[in-house]
Length: 310
Image (cartoon, rainbow, N blue to C red; front, top):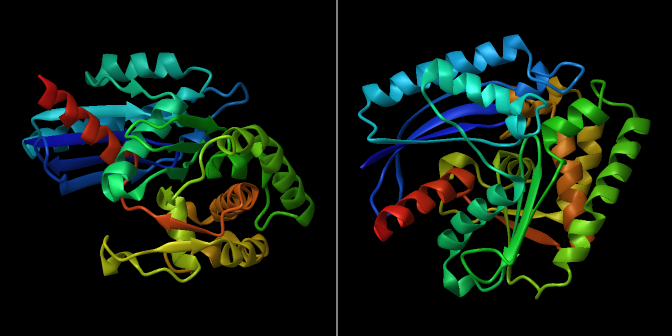
């Protein structure tokens, strides 16, 4: 069957069409996406303003038409932290449904972490043992760990690369003072999650998902996307520490010239590097392996698991 997956994220809004059936590997058929940083449309009260809502509704209307044109039999639509944490998130979801007929499921942070973890588990298989997965989004940072398909611990903290950039790293490039303060804020925010994860059995594999981690790995020397999904890609803490300092001194335009960094995400790469560095360092991890599957694949797998159970 052909399944449409509509992902309303903090940096992009993306419809991915997948051909798959229960027990099979999901194969991408086509996609329709747009750079839409909803955090840029927040007013002083933390609500998504009229302009942002209009942009979102226009995209969803076009995405739904794209799905129909290409014979999608089902549509899995969800929203993450951009709407979850907006002051008027529920009202935005209701308006989207009223004007487009598309009902967006609002994923909680732990749900997001757990679905991503499922994708990582399926990618690596049971032989990978105890997995720790890290995922940096635009609005939040998810951490999940366990030895089964459902993580023993699934956590979400407000350390998304977009959120941190807007709230803590103004300037282009930001001042040394703001970078120092952001580092301190990140460390303090990660204290409890790191302590909780350290109570569990050590990980056999540390995986990292999301565009932010893929870009950081590419900057530090990992294979390009064109090499395919089966090439092993790693992010080493020693390289990350070096590049975090370099990114702090670079403008967004200079960062956009780096391999694997898009214009849309260039401004956020410093924040992503600071979060990744703090997490790996705090957890005592020297290297993380980049996993090609993430949240969208996890939700697809959940949907087909449900269909198989019927």
